[in-house]
Length: 435
Figure 1 (cartoon, rainbow, N blue to C red):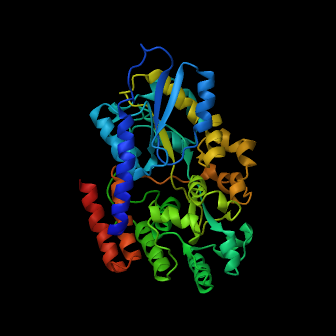
Figure 2: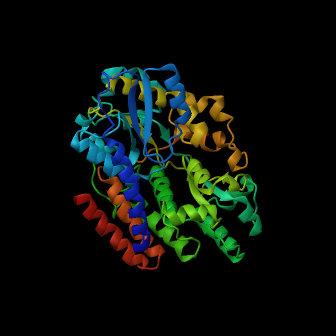
Figure 3: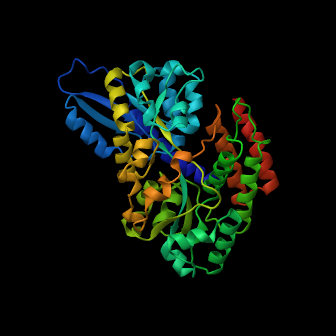
């Protein structure tokens, strides 16, 4: 992203980090000798949708008070603090969320976490998709780092009012027919652009790039920046270059609003109706609603994503060994990741369950989302969720991904040619992986 946006984000990150540090002393404190309930701190990023679940849990566990930290923060704000707290042996929550792209890195130091297999978690294996369960295990299968929360089936969210203004179909089935492939998506975008609606066709190239990469990798090799032996393959995995080239086609067509993902400008663009489509994993629905606000209710809808499905995102809940309330934290993590807990989170913020039982529950299958024009989100995201193909992510996945997406961003902003951008992506990815 550009220097200006980077500085603005740095300021936001500083405020968020300061807020987190301000409460860090409370996390993991031994308050067993104090009168009243013990406090369990839960560290998350983004929107996990646990507010009502916390209330339910505390009502049935009057000896427990739950405090959530990090709500709304993005991964680049959250993960450095979690890494720092784990390394220091203090400051982390009693339950911590770990995004799938960082899981391998944290599994390299399993001593930082409670082995959930020692606390009855093995009996819960059937509550998760097989691959989701296996992702939480160390390479030797002897330690379970975390219990799965969600998976990230991908769709395409779009603004019906802007499509109508551009003379395009607005019904979700008809919209889906517009773009069976990414080239069809570009062609649709060019029609939208020609209508001069005052809005861009999509928000940012980086979100679309990541969608195409994970989709292509899932349908081919099963890995993106690292192969399954943890060898960096950013310049030899065809999926990466294919995603880059397709994204360049989108950029060259002038379809992107160039709003840096997760920046203040990006959030404002939602509120100001500045773009018409955004690549939309299930968890993104909560982000869109939060960013666009109540005024946009009923203006958004959800269609099929170009290409063939895909999976973007998904997290785990782990219990750091530094927690002074490990037993209570484990029980809370089990509750939040149970089928009931995953259904509750889906209803609140949209993250798609990784529990087969939850995916089969009428509460998911028959669910609709009023904000997104009563879209049948259970069917859109849930259908085929059991057959989602995971993408392996290596030890420095997040750092490598950041460098590649930064290179995409420089091309989007016209600061580098596509050829220069690709060279930067490869070289900077290698540097990040070597650190």
